[in-house]
Length: 430
Length: 155
Ligand SMILES: [Zn+2]
Image 1 (cartoon, each protein chain N blue to C red):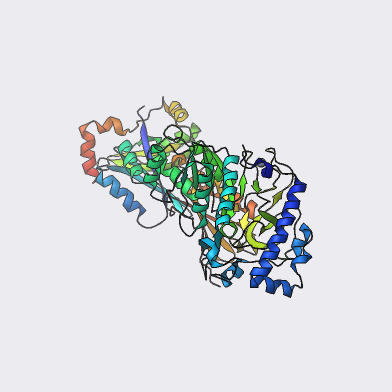
Image 2 (cartoon, rainbow over the protein chains, first blue to last red; image 1 turned 90 degrees about the horizontal axis):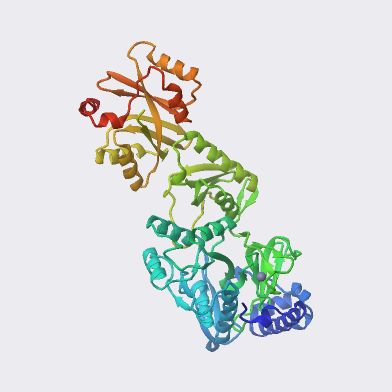
């Protein structure tokens, strides 16, 4: 099913024409209204008229997270304050937050993209979406909410936490669709299991959208299997509206990035050079259809690749792979770049360990991976545990090329998260 | 042969784990007949022979412990020099591979048993069926008064 079939199935040629037209508009708008861009353009000796083809995007300056922080609160606004109707902020661990503004049209356009995503994954009128993301300054919940209302489904604005109430809501209102973080989904599974609930018999769940945290394919499969649902990957970031930037279709093979709204590039994070389709690098996004905050070549810090080839669903917007890692999350041990998700991927492939894990960094050449064993698979044999530990150590080593110290823990030892999981504990001092 | 079950509990090597486990057993009135601790770098498995193993397992699980129950054999050791040797020699002759073994003593040390944890318990039981051995089982004795007396002796 399609929400906007003509746009979703648009020919590549027509799409590129549309992109170029919108890129030119965006560049003019940014240059004219945002001093930050005007300054950068003159430093680079370029002007909006120099953008005559899509390839010319490479002439444009990058925008970084730090830029958004520096120009907080109103510095990146391209319209007057009277024209904006919504503010979201995105806070980092340090320093100033980033302010993201929406005009009325921006709110509507973001909702349109979500509507495409929902319909693409089989949602229809009569579906009930329980939105377990945090409402408030964070974009995750509200943007999804508006999109779901646009489609015409019942939205339960549950927010995260209070798991017993979540379960009651899901049962009472026959929730079919969840919008949830992967770690909370796993936690919810544990609670249901402990309560003796059968996800298939006692609920009406059909699908879930996981977002706001990276997770592995194994985690997706685990969640799908436990709840008997389809799990769709979604990608978004506050700076680019929030959720709905890219979304999986029912093929579940990469996320269609809505190229009429964004231009994507994948670059080498160190050199800034564009990578060809299929190669891994940092995703860089340019907004094409925003009034309040046009952003040029935003460095997302997310590592992904553009999947070459057409999707069976017929949509022409290219797909990106699941986020392989974040340039921020990257851990360096013994000089090797490691993403926590690589370790997660390994662990989820080992049956005898649970979903929860922790990476502890005590020095620059030693990392400890702490995992909980699965209660039901404990058979009392020490040698089995030793073998398990060796197996995990070896599998992680072959994935990341660094031999970790693996600690087996009693189930329930690691903190369970109801929000974003803290997986890495860095005890190293600079 | 009656079944004798061993309780195994997974434990990280950190202070107070044994105390916590034995506290649960004490509160439930479970009597510990034998204990064995096997540890590796960072973790260990604590094993018990108790009088009420199903109850002990259930209560420990409720408290969040990781518990496993498996059948073991308790072979009576004759109270004379070479008692243990005779049993070991027999097991070895029968090619019964021992994973773990420890001793259970009952009745003011009048009787000692070798707890033997083997990989294939059914096979081992068959092999030893016609040997002149006496086995200890909790269930059988738990019903009789003599075990009560022996329990007191243990305390
Ligand atoms: Zn598709």
